[in-house]
Length: 437
Image (cartoon, rainbow, N blue to C red; front, top):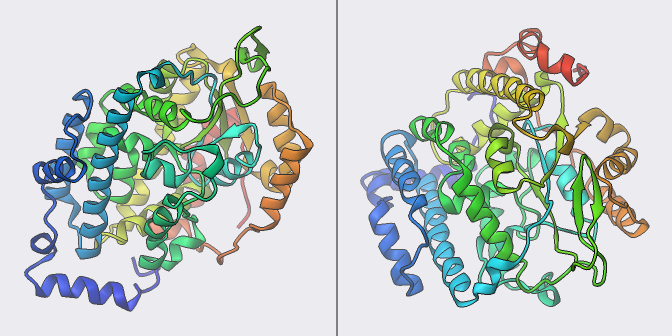
């Protein structure tokens, strides 16, 4: 990882302290049973809901013990994360038990942004979240979901500051991370952090080098994770009410939306996760009326950029990262995944009529023309207020706001020409242009 900048001195010193005290695993043990016991004691609750999460949890904890090779910073981050997820899950289940009406709240026709990582999904998510008609899960409410958020205090809730301190710690551990992705307590959060409550989430295989868990995740059903994902959306929308009183709710017809008569309008959830690309049948099984925005970009850019991001994430928690192995694994997995999506759309395994394709270069060169066309394809209205808010947000967040993100295919044992050859079917199918540089 010689192409990465040196760690901050405090990180090196902190990890050195761990070694001097007998090793990081001695200082911060990550014991699955103890974490569960601590969550029960801390919350005073003992009902985690159904047991679908327990197998994934056991596989993850075993992989962490055998494979993750965490330093002290990594163990602190991972331990605190798992503890928070267990406690939040307990509180979510308890709140739903106390308010059974939450289970009746509709989650209808969510808009889901997906595509390969580094293909514009984050900025698109943040821009569309400026539309007052959309409701996106924010970091603070996903991390600390109880009590359910309320519109009147949504921008001032004290949990925002608490979550912000936690998620921006990543910027302190690896300052270069901020050039790749910005964390914030009030920012929209990816679905992988909701699905992490089921312990079936690519979040863990992204920040941790846990190959046995990654294989398990790729070969097991993710519908339980999407079901608990839906449970969380219902809870987060509990105090929200309809988006527009007296306006009928959307019903999908092809890629457009028609209206039902005499029904209140539910929240229009706006969601995002690149990792959904590999599990679209499971997503549509739980959200059959979901509308997908699928982003496309030159793999010679997305693969090394994703490898750089993942290497940085993993290096926050461990000392050694095999950049070449990581790059080659990503190239192989992303190519196979995109080919599988082409087949799924062609065979009808997933509903092609509910998918809108969006090209990264168009989003960057003409963001609002691209967004207007996307709204039209989805059968939605882009209001003047929504566009004004999007323009203001984009003006305050120019590209490379926190510095350029340097990466090159060669850093990960890759070559541009070979990448484009490997992804040739995908690039032809979606008319993906090769980028210069």
